[in-house]
Image (tube, rainbow, N blue to C red; front, side, top):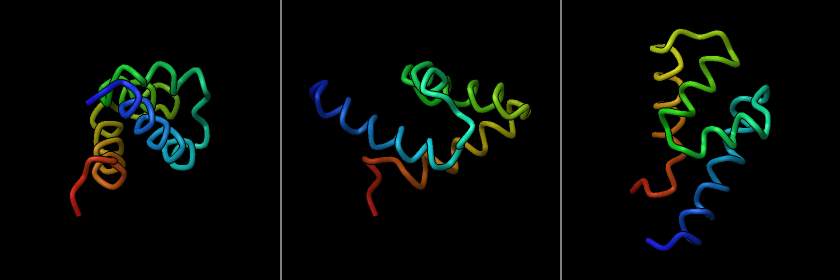
Length: 71
């Protein structure tokens, strides 16, 4: 997959993440560009969740919003 397609899909996910977690800043989401595990860390830090709670939230979000998901 070329980098333009990846960047476009990431932008879709970021827009949905902003809607899901309104307290995330652009800097938070920039950190999360490194992948889902980084998004877990950002959600954990910003919302004071345990790692497990943040992982569950991010996994549920990802399952619902993954642009490559087959319906």
